[in-house]
Image (cartoon, rainbow, N blue to C red; front, side):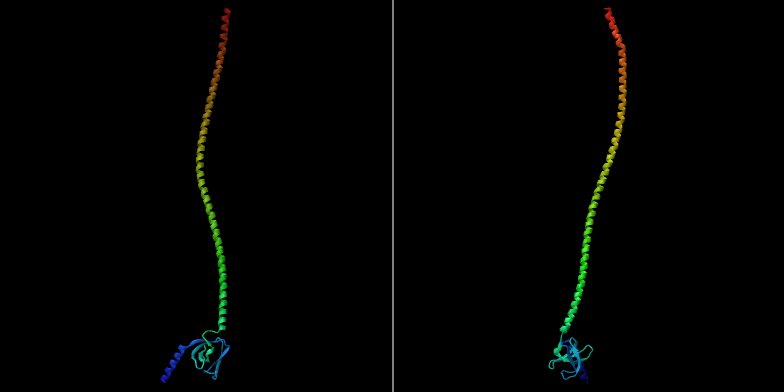
Length: 221
């Protein structure tokens, strides 16, 4: 009895270690029987694409023992088993994946378009800021130049105001001196005129006497 139990445990372990995943081929339906021949009872019909767990394969009978997901077991014809899903299921899965990829691609394209638009807007803004910065730099340089010129002009204006004040003082001094010279000239002319008048009066008094004396001398002769 103990040997039978050990044998069963070894068989189960071997069967579990040997188990592989298989799929029903593209045939519409196949039968899962209770044994390895057409004479055994049909347990159920398996549709194409049904996932099975391969327990063992008998190459002599051409049948393989399989287990369904619900745990039920049976025998199916080995040639109807494939190591991958049926072409129809793979096609459907590929189409689904393709649709998903296309959808993701559309989303990525939309994001790319949006990023491109934002990038273009940022470039335009950057160019505008660069142009404004250049304009402001030129304006600052112009204002700085004007400020420098204004300081120079203010210094020159201060110097000119000082020179103007000096010229005004000199002009006032000349006016005073001119007035003084004019007064002196008037006095000189007055003195000269007075002298001329006085001299004339003296000549007027002297000349008659000189003429009289000459007549007296002539008459005595």
